[in-house]
Image (cartoon, rainbow, N blue to C red; front, side, top):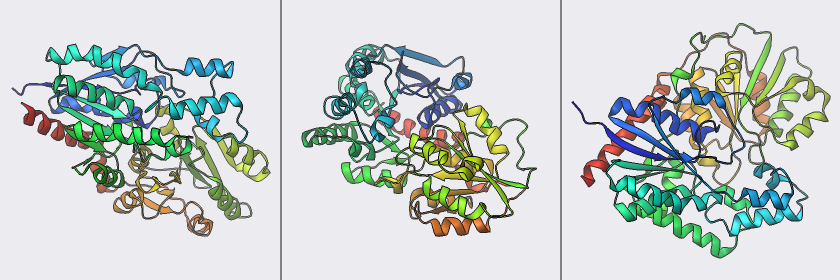
Length: 432
C-alpha cells in the first residue's frame, strides 16, 4: 500500500471567492488524492475580495481539511480615507479624475504595502505554520501568487524548517503589467526584484502557467522553471451537456469573464456593428461577467449596439455553462499589455472543452495562439485589427454540431494534477 503524503497549499483565493486563481487550486485539491497526495488548504479567515461564487463551495470535498487563519488587511484604512464603501481597485485605477483619497490610496498601495496589501498576513502565518511543519504534519508546501506576499510565507517556512516548497506563479512578479499602473518609486521596484529573487532561488520547484512566463522567470533566476498550465475539468460540463446548438437563426457570440482597462472590446464592437447592422444574418453578443464603466457607457450611446449586445452580469460558474450551451462562437479578449504574449487564462481551456470555436483578440504570436492552433480550436487576431475581425465575422457560419480535438485532453485538470504530483514526488524524494 502506497503511503499518502500531505501537502499544504497556501492560497489567498478560495471559495466562495470567484475567478481563475480559485479554480486552479480548487481543481488540484480535487485530484491530488487520486495520486497519493492529501492536500490541506491554508487560507485567510475573512479575505477581502470583490467577486464571490457561493456555488463553488459545493465543489469542496467534505473530507478536505481547510485551515482558515485570521488576516488583517489595510482596506479598512482605505475605507476611512474614502469615507464609505471601498470601490473596486481596478475601477479606481481606471478613473480619469481621481480624488485626493483615490491618489493617496493608490500611492500607499504602490510604495508602502510591499509586495502587496496581504503582506501583514506573512509573519503571523509563518509563526503559526512553523509548529505544524516541525511536527511533521506535511511532506511539502505550495504557495501560489498573486498575491505574491504568499510566497514570502513559503520563504519563511523554508528558512525556518527546510520543508520541501513549490512556488506557483499565476502571473509575473517584478515584470507584472499591473505594477506598471502604480506610481511606484524606484527603490520599491528594486525591493520587488530582491524579494522575487529570494523566492526564486530558495524554492525547491517553481511553476508558472505559460511558456512566455516560464522563459521570463528562467531568465531572471537562471534555473529550471516548470510549465504547469491552467486547464479544464470535464466534470464541470452538465450531465445533460450536448455538443450542439439548435437555434441557427441568430448567431450567438459569447464572452465570459472580466472586461477592464487591459481587456478592450471596443474594436470588436466596432467590427460587430459594421458586419451585422445591415446584414440579413442576425447576431447577438453576450457579455457574462463584470464589464467596465467605459464599455457600459459606450453601449448606452449606440442604439444598435444597445439592442444587440446583452450584459448578463456576473453569474455563478455553474450557470455559465447554460450560456456556453447556446453559443455558436466564443470570444476571448486577452490582455493588451507587455505581458500579452504569455496571457493564457484558464478561460481558454474551459472554452476549448465546450467544442465551440474561439475567436481571441490578442497577440497572434502569443502562447494562447499556439494553444488554439494545436487544438484546432480557433484563432487569435490582433486587438485593433478591425479589418481581420470583420473578415472573420463576415465569413463565419454558425454550426449546429461541435467536437473537441483530442489535443485538448492534455489540459484536463486530472492530467495536470499528474504533472504536479510528479514535481512533488521529485522534490519530496530529493529531501528525504
